[in-house]
Image (cartoon, rainbow, N blue to C red):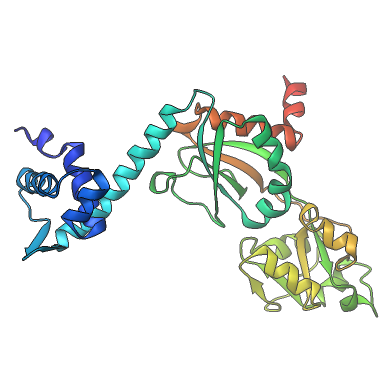
Length: 304
């Protein structure tokens, strides 16, 4: 047997091994695969012979994965999952399929979800799975088709689609500024400042924009948008928050705009697509829908 063939065992061997590894029993694996216990045992033995490695320790009527078997089971399980997902995608029609999308938690909750029923209505053949991500990641290491990202479009090996800018304005609870409402950026510099971990330079950029020396070492930092919003509502300080994501709190009076002067930034919201997924039908449908929702589709049409 050539080395190439030896390193690619048959699917029946791999499925028998995977089931036995998960179930911890040849008998249970046989029930799952609708085979006899002997057939599963023979497939696993053939796999061990082909790879020249012991994957299970046999002790009387029980089996236990070896250290090498544990590592192999984890990797083969992931590989079989990829094969199953690929087969499901192939079985759907050309315009359908599975779409695994990474989104920013608050953007997803406040902006995307209220609109997403429209996407599903127009594309009932697409099954969408969401995961939340706060920072860039490696598409090659995760089973994701695309991501909605805030920042700069600097991910390697990706195509980026600009969706919209973000207008972050200084806000606080009404009680924080009830006695002395700020009249200029310098007044805000005297307030406790709340910071968002994913926007570490937001306040510095805003003060620089208004030619005010940045206050140093004051205020708390929060990992998530929802927490910094609640901290601002609780009167713990002033925060720079995107207007379109806090409109409900502004309308209810839980937050007030301190100065209607948004921070200017080069960063924005982008749909990030790995280059090998650009022609995938569900991605094309999502891209066109997002551009329509953000008004970029009409802008592109005018530019052509």
